[in-house]
Length: 402
Image (cartoon, rainbow, N blue to C red):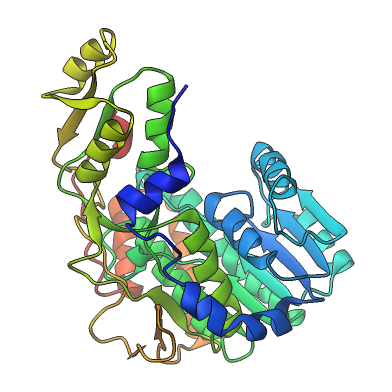
C-alpha cells in the first residue's frame, strides 16, 4: 500500500504553499459569503468530482439550509456522502440528498421544479480532459455536456432565477488550442450572453493536483498495481490543491458581478511546474529513486523486477492533439481587474448578443447531422465563432499513451 500523505505532498512538492493561496480573501469576505449562503437552498450539479466536492466542502464551512447534489457518477456520490459525514467542521444541513441523475434528462427538470426554489446553483458537470478529444463521436459528447446541456440549463434558470449561478470554465478557454478549451470558451460566451438577465459567473483556474482522472492521481493507481509511471517531459502547468479549487469556485459564485470570469493571480514564470519534476519528487517521496527508461516497453519490463530501490519512469515529449506546453488564464485584449482581490483577478468581458450566441449553438448542433462527419469540419465550424482558435492537430491522442 502506498505510504504517502497526498495533501502534504501537494503542499510541499507541488504548490509549495503551506496554507491556501486564497485564505486572506476568504477571511476578508467571510461575512459576505455567510450572508449569501446561510439559510439558503443550494443545488450542485456534477458535485461528485474533485472540484465539485471541494466546492461543497468550502460551502459547508457556512450554513446552507438545504443541499442537493446531482451527478451521473453513482459511486462518486456514495464516496462524497461518506467523505462529508466523516469530515470535521462541516455544517451538513438536515435536508441533504444526493441523486445519481444526468442534468440533461427530464427527471432533473422535475426535481429542479418540485424541490426548489434554489438560491444558489453551481454546475461542475463537464468534460474536463483534453484526452476526451478524439473524433466526431467524442467531440459531440463533449460539446453536448459542456455547451448544449448548459444552454438547456440556462433556459431553465432564466425562468426560475437563483440569486447566484456558477458554471465552471478552464484556463484552456484562453487562446484555446484544443476542442475542450474551445467548448468552454463557447460556454463562457453563452453565460456572458445570459448575464444581463441572470446573475452568473465562471472561473478559469489551474490543474487541480491529484484530481479524479488526472495524471498525478493515476500515479497512485500505478504504484498500487506495481506499474511504471509515464509523463510528458515538456508540459508545465499551474497547480492548485483540491481545497483551493473549491474556494476559487465559491468566491466566483458568490462575490462576483454577473458575467465576470475569475482566475488566480499566479505568476506566469514562477508558478508553473513541469509534470516531470513533480513525477521525480513523487518517486523520491516514496523513498525510491527514478529509474529512467527510454520506452514504454522498457518501463513495463523493469516494473516486473522492481526491487524496492528504484521505480521505472518513462518521460517523453508531448505529441498529442490539443496539447499546449504551458498555461495562461487570459488574453492580452481581455479587460482585467487585479485590484479587488489579493489572490484573484477578474475579467469583465464585453456584452455578447444572446440571439447570435444561440444561433451559433444551433449551427453547431446541425453540424452533427452531417453524414460521415470528420473532426476537421467541427473545428472549422468552431473557428467561425472563435477566430483565434488555433487547434493543434497531430493525429494522435492520449489513448495511445501509457
